[in-house]
Length: 169
Image 1: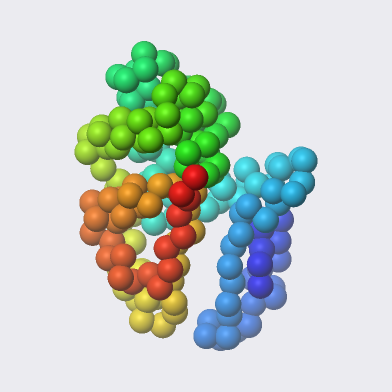
Image 2 (image 1 turned 90 degrees about the vertical axis):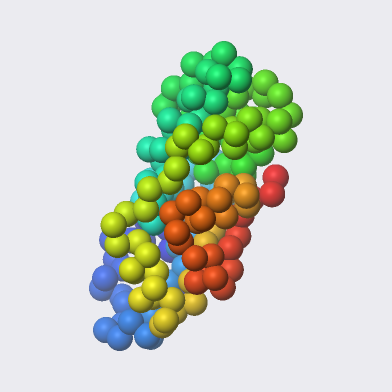
């Protein structure tokens, strides 16, 4: 079953009573073929910060890197325009193509130690419980190094996931 947030309201009424009979994949980018993408934004907002406080912390880091490396004042509204794009498009858009995607990424990564991800209190416990019963996966538009680094600094074991999909471009 593939759902976007448009179908989330009906989800409780259509799920079987037994969790083992349920298989759900949320695909927020399924709407990319539409010119009016209002529901993509709704999906991204619902799926962000599922395991860690990504958005709040990354916005601060992005703003700091903009000021430090490119003398740019980055706003939340500016970041929001690019949030969810494939990583190279995201990072280039955030910093107005001030450098190559590779250099933008390296500069951004160089300050991330000042902005470690924070897991929600029950994240590791929930992952441990679910991983014993279900195959878990991660789908992200982020850079693979950032995903793995984020897992490391939050003590999330990447071996709990059978698949980690990230953006390479």
